Image 1 (cartoon, rainbow, N blue to C red):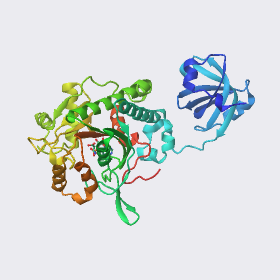
Image 2 (spheres, protein in one colour):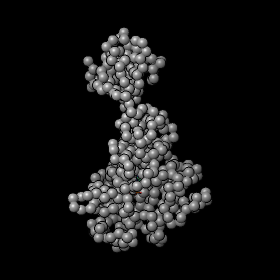
Image 3 (cartoon, rainbow, N blue to C red):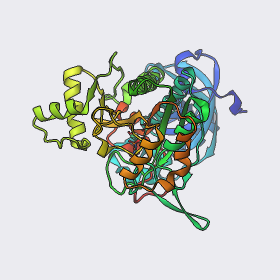
Length: 441
Ligand code: AMO
């Protein structure tokens, strides 16, 4: 009798199982091969792959069942572990009992051959696509990174908050916001928890973080934009300057990458040879004006006083990798015209701001800075950005009743995963990606 509660992961059997002992395993049929009186099954569970041998002269019943198995069917097997030179991992299970829980039909895509199928088709069949150990690894890494971020925040005195994603006004710029119908009123999906995380600080929580969805009505089809992504947000009060926020972002991102590599180094090296597995001790910090100069010296035309284009970011990533040996770089003091109303401007040079982006292999993965906490100045900045202060009344009120100097940042989780593993498309790092065309699955 097979009891699933006795089941052990195949990776455990390969590593620590005792030959000669009986074990139960369960999972999906990765491949199946019939040779005369023997059927070889490669069984896959979350932990890895293992060979099962089903011999007619051990169990005729199991052998008859095994001969009819189709790939991706769900099975369980009980048998004796034995050493085998020919088997992957040097061990196999000699099956005595075999159960089929679910027989798979002929497959519409081949999970293991993910490279032979277009991404669109893979996403249509996402549950099958994710059965490839490579694709599973992406989400093991993502989960580890989210945990590591949470742990880092806890250790550094940040309180987790859960803010509303149904909001009355856009925060990050008017165009990229999704409108929704909220009873008889217009409403929007939150582009960022920006104003609410600031509220957390001003409400007296001092340091807050949130890991949650953010929505952007991003009409472009690029390999780095989603219309829904996971934002790792932090906000901290009583800062001396935005350097304190950069220190925090550096700490979080470092702990995310290091935790993922520590937990899954073997899988990462096997499936993502191009992955970043070590970060440098220091992450360089350069002002955007220095960045303009570096880019110009390499023949890339940049508009002074403008945001960096995607192309410029990519090129800057290359330069920094070469000059500083770092895949990460903070670019600071972005121009006021490229930043949202809540950003604090440089006191002596108000056309620049106390803000930063973090680039990772030439792609922006985080944005942050110090926030304007002086009521009158903030009000003027809202107007200067062409927004109506009346729509921000509840927000502005926070700055009339005691707001500490504060700052924070937003980190795009999928982008961190994508750049760490060297994925060609951000959709691969999102379980169920949303883009202008895709709403299912
Ligand atoms: P920003 O708009 O730069 O800043 O977003 C912060 C980070 O979120 C990620 N990101 C995205 N990821 C995938 N698809 C998208 N369409 C997308 N848009 C943004 C990026 C980006 O660096 N409130 C500020 C943050 C702050 O100052 O605290 C904000 O949202 O990794």
